[in-house]
Length: 514
Image 1 (tube, rainbow, N blue to C red):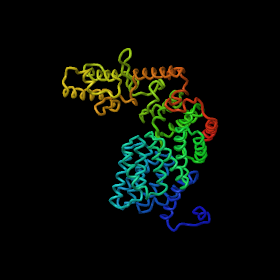
Image 2: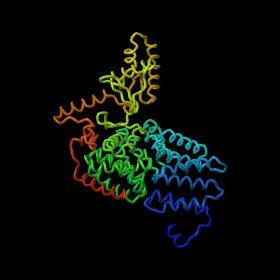
Image 3: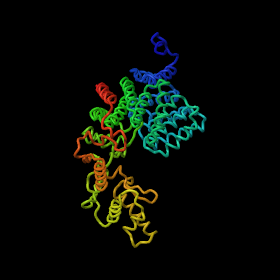
Image 4: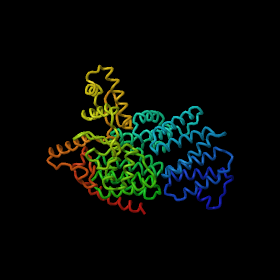
């Protein structure tokens, strides 16, 4: 209607009114008509009409919603600069409670999309505190939803559960758009918790609501999430249907971050179903986008999937520097130590078979002298006992057999502190309920690699098949190609429908690359 009126020469009564209408237009287009090429024009129009207005709330309204649009279109660097400018503006006089809760809502969303759970949850709580103090609850449910997504982004399931409890209590009064986001994140939550049936139910609910609301951006995300769940359910026919519809939507949207997430998730599905060509082509385009735009996260991030995909990328020489950086930044793990490519970027490598050696980021750790003897002895004992879930008492008995309990505990605590200081990474060693472990995200040991190869050989001999070759001896596209634990892996080949869909997808990928 606005387009039609403007084409007939309609004029606004004031620049302030024009700024608000222009802002409403680019927000509506971002949510409902993401394919429109004039979104940027409306943003510039809103800024031009509001820049000289004396009301700081109008300028905040335009700036914050422009940042929202930039985030949904994947332009995070520009969005970050705009949010910081609005944060400074919000500290001035005359700023309303609505503007302040809007700022906190947008900040929560930004940190969610950047996978920064700490700042995300902090902004969420600050926004909710302002809302409770002022009674302005316009964004309260949405802010909670973004906090929920931020906790899930870093797999903080305990924090996610706390936020989910608040969301469940408030869901009855939420808008349908906010419910789309809520159920979309709830499906992600269930997938991270390995609750496949709940993930399926929530993904279907989110998709139904997204279609009803007419939000094509979230419809694409929901279809992709549903396809991922259906793939795990072995429902290939329905998985294919969702992939095809998702492809048609994304092809019409000029959004690099959306393309990055969709291509990456598709690559995982394709490689899981024995289609290395389609999967690696999609992965190549996805990781090229990630490198170009600095992307390190997308919604519905599944760490196990991303670890496998980075193993594929490193093994096949697909943006290997970007893939290794992603591993380091996000603490990703390969499918197993045995299936990791030779140049997987382990923070630490511990060799104990044939002599002890400790490498930090590929270089021998300078650990000579008497001060390092006990910490290294603790590390050796830990690895000798399996390196996972080793009781403190067992380690103390091995290192300090003649020292009584309390003194041994103090020696253990002191030595563990010195070992962490020596390594330079507290997270590499996990002490939980009196049991010490090396964290597999950061540490590789030759003992673990040997055990994994031995297990693979034993399993192959039991099944009458061939032993799995080490990663270094296999072609790159086979690294981590199938998950042993999934029933469909035994089938050995994809269905004709899935094969056709994966081939069709390559056409979309080629078009997107132009």
